[in-house]
Length: 57
Ligand code: SF4
Ligand code: SF4
Image 1 (cartoon, rainbow, N blue to C red):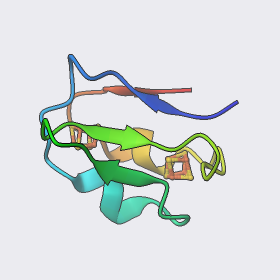
Image 2 (cartoon, protein in one colour; image 1 turned 180 degrees about the vertical axis):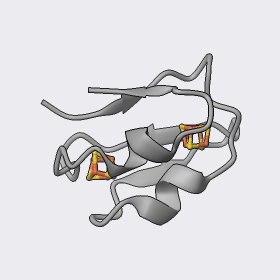
Image 3 (cartoon, rainbow, N blue to C red; image 1 turned 90 degrees about the vertical axis):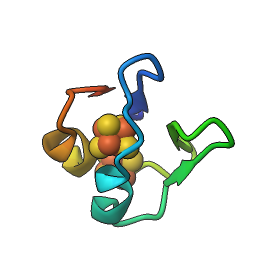
């Protein structure tokens, strides 16, 4: 399993990117953030800081 970001909910704040220990999170051309499932460690740090609860396992 890996965590993923619901694009419809993401407001592009970037908070999750700063919390990710593996660098799995990046921003797309549309300003929404994405998680690379190959790099995700399933730690949950990003989900715990997202202000709009857009990140789920
Ligand atoms: S669950 Fe952890 S490793 Fe995976 S994207 Fe979120 S912060 Fe990064
Ligand atoms: S913390 Fe949440 S709202 Fe902010 S960029 Fe990440 S997924 Fe989007």
